[in-house]
Image (cartoon, rainbow, N blue to C red; front, side, top):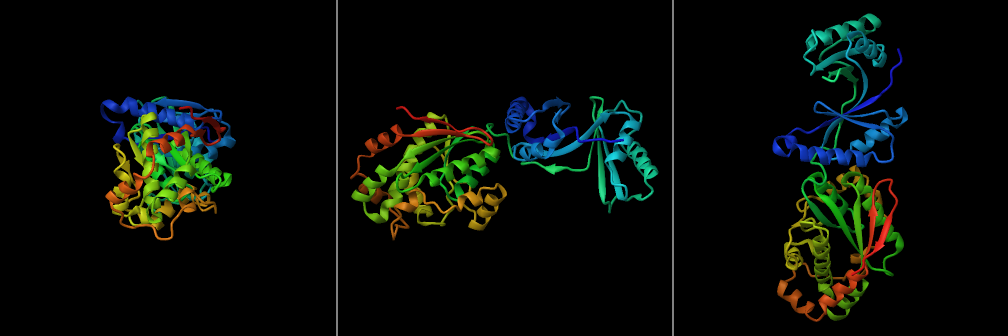
Length: 399
């Protein structure tokens, strides 16, 4: 008997699906699953507390599994063989997909209580059939080489599988509201976005571009990061802000040691306005306490003071090595280390102030026409929408 993987079983976490909000969470998770599988042929089935992906090309199994492992809210995934719940059919399928030799164990979960046999009896019958078909197999419930799982569902079908692949866990993207991510070309900000998306946050992103001091390759790097992040966070709308004129003004009228502090105050103001436009409840940054001069408590206080909405810094207590480990996991690290400068490195002073005083920043900033500079920058914003496998939609902001 020849059998092939014909169903992919999706399990979702139970904790966040309890109570009155269950239908809402499920609708978001289903939407995100379908979004992740966009462009592939398949049928989505929802049955008795399980989701199944079926009617796909068998050559697409690993691609489907790979995409599903990036969908937050999924607990685990199992490529399965689906057969009618008949003891002979299940036993034959079990024999077909099992190694011909080695120590094995059969584990049965029986949601269908109409069957005459309980889970232990079903496991014993299937195990006996496997032994009969290949004497080189032996039963070992503890030190087994392979474990055959049989999930007997109430829909009249049983699902046989060996692999139980860990999902992305977390909450479905969108259930915790929207946030505006300050996305640089560095290692930290994509990781910060990933962490917030895992908690159910829908991400929008803003990038500050210092043309001609930063190249188109530097901008493409940021777009590539957003696209890579979209595998986990879903489609991301990226606002590209022309920032050179603001940097010139700060450079000409403010002390060089305050360049970064005042520059980041402008960034936060613009991010807040974009956040409000996009109905975002917070700003997200990749700051880690003490990592650089602009990320001391005093510096953070200076930048925070210009906004009224919450600023989330999910990496604030993380070491660089921990952040790098996550960036490697989500496949953004190699993009982040491409040797292209971002807007902060181009105008970086030799000796930036480490513990700036708010009153000093306000005094120096008063030399600038802050509102006019912000309005001009926002009038030139270009917006691109990025997703894995999707085309790049682009529009220039009109204000």
